[in-house]
Every structure is written in C-alpha cells, then in structure tokens.
Length: 449
Image (cartoon, rainbow, N blue to C red):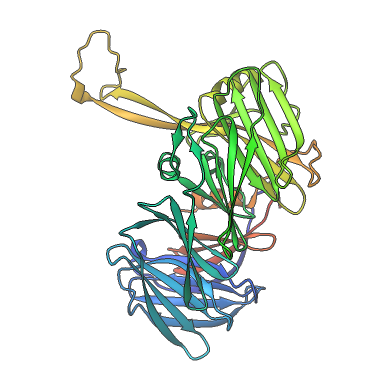
C-alpha cells in the first residue's frame, strides 16, 4: 500500500567516501528542469533532467575552490544555468560557482560572511534565488542576503522599534525573545511535522516576503510581515482564544492568509481560525475534557520515540498530557483536502542506575557515579481533515508522501544521502544506493496507491 515509483537512476561510484559526500536536488521554477547535484570530496556531478525526468545534460567536474566545503544551496540564473553555494565556517565565506552546462565551464566568486557581528539563522531557495537570513549579534535586527544572477543584495531588517514580552508578560528585547525561542523555518507547500511546528518562533517563506510569528505569550500571537523588496515590516497582533482557566500551552500556524491558533489547559482545548487580513474569527471551537472532539478524524494518539502510536482512552487524558507539552499544529493542503495535525511534543528525562534501579533508591546503596540520564521523546496528537472551504469531513487519513518517504528510508538502509524536493503534485526523493552504486530518483504521492 506504500509503493513508490523509480523514475530514473544514474551510475556513480562514491567509493568509500560516502560520509564526505552530499546530494542536493533542485527545480528551476522558470523552466521546470530538475537538477541533481552530487558532490564527493574530489568531484561534482551535475545532472539536468527535463520536467518528465529524462536526462538532458550532465556536467562532471572537479572540486577546485570548494575542497573541504559543504554544499549549502543553489540558485538558477536567467540563462537556466545553476549557481552552487559552498560554505566554510572556518573561512567564514561562501564560494559561489556558476556552472555553464552548454560549454562545461564554471566561474567562481567569493562572498565573505560577516560572522563576527552576525550568525546564520537559516538559508533557503525561493523562485530560483538563494536566501541567507542572519541575526545581528549587537542590534535588534535581522539581515537578509538575496543572491540573484550572481549578485548579493543585502537587506537590513530593523526590529528595534517594536515591543516584546515573554510568557510572564515581562518586557524583553527582540534578541532575548529569539535566544529563548529559536526560529524554526516552515517549508511552504509541504507538510511540517509536529516536532517543528511546536516551536514558539516560526518563519514562513513566501515570494519576496517573510512572515515571522512569535508565540511565547499565552495571550497573543505577534506576527511581522516582512517585505524583502521595500524592507517594510508590518506588525500584526492576534489575540488567542480565552477559556475559563489559564492556558498551560499554546501556539499558532499561518497558512494561506489564515492564522490557526490553539490554547490548552487540562480542562479544555480552544481552537480558532482567523482571517489574516481582517483578524476576524472564521471558525471557533471549545472542547472540554468531557467532550468528544468533533473535528477529529483519527483516534487521540500518543507516540513514544518512533514506536507505533497507541490510542488514548478519552479527551480528558489527551488534554492532561497535551497540557504538559509544547503544543503545536500543522496545516497542509494537497489537491483534495486540508489536513490539520493538532498536538504537542516533549521529552521526559529519567535518571537510572547502571544496575537498572531507580535513582530514588530507598537503601541509598548506589554511588552517584552509577547513574545516567535517559531522555525519552514523546508526543500526543490527532488528525483533522477539512475541505478547502473549511468544512468538516468524515474522511479517514491516508498516508502523506512524506510518510512514505520516511517509511522507505527506514526500511531501505542501502539508501543514503537522501534529499527530497516538492514538485507540483508529488515528492521527488533522490538518494545514493550503496549496493547498485547509483543515484536513484523516486516519486512519492499522497494517499494509498
């Protein structure tokens, strides 16, 4: 039921240097050509496929200028040729190399990263450009570097005029908020798993635009809409739904001009969907611990580590557990429906003796150096399936393409250096098969095949 399709393969021998190799896959969004970049310590293979995944061109070259550097990302010029970004933390630099497939030549440039007064938050590709987002060390600001057609444009994003508070309503600086709540990048158009969406600070990547959401407060979601062309930053505040008792955990998720918010305590779950432009509530739900969650399309589940999830017996047990975790929700749309995963994740740290006895040994017979800590990760969640018009459905959840990719990689240990690319209606998995010594491209779609 979780089958997948092999689209193409290409023979390449990485010998015994797999640990020092990388594979990255990218789409030229103007031409819809797909590129595979396979880097070993001493060579680089660039494979160019058309939109139907037929191999159209290739460029095999050495690693001159990029020895001991890691492949950070890519962009595409207007002539269709790729530029790769090779990063060296030791040298505090990025080597940009544009590769000309038509005559098998390349041109290199060096970009010095200002790591003395900035640190890297994230990097990503969007609309054939490469973006590097950095945090200023001594200023209440971010800096965005936009690499386009071989040029780097610097954008200084000043947050010093805005006010911030922590969960105890104490004033904090922008830097303090991000230090306590590191930013997690949300992948646009893809399913973002629960462990990512529980972050209190999220960055959503849109064309020429960023949305930064801050959820450290139980009372409100603070959003900053950042125009990367004009550098204008607009602040928007969305109050969270209020229940009869104080919340224990809360969060939000932005998706296609709507903000989804939850507030949770052991007695109730509050869930709101608001219009991003007006702030008006579109849908609002209050679920008490005695209720059945009527917008749930799955059982209430608990998962410990990567074991099979087990059912929780009722809403009260679910809310009690969720209240002690970092809550989050993920919204994902495919061709048919809107999928919402609502839950929370956390960890439990237990101290255990080397002999298997509990730390609180009543006899006190074990010296302190006989103990070690075990951290167990666990989550609780349920899944909700809606129409694109935000109407409830009775449908049952079918596996996402990402679920199938994780399952495939878990059961095929010969597949290494895995990299995924979201295309129009499927996910392309590229990896190196150590048995056949090939780069393999496989197609995964949502639903049962």
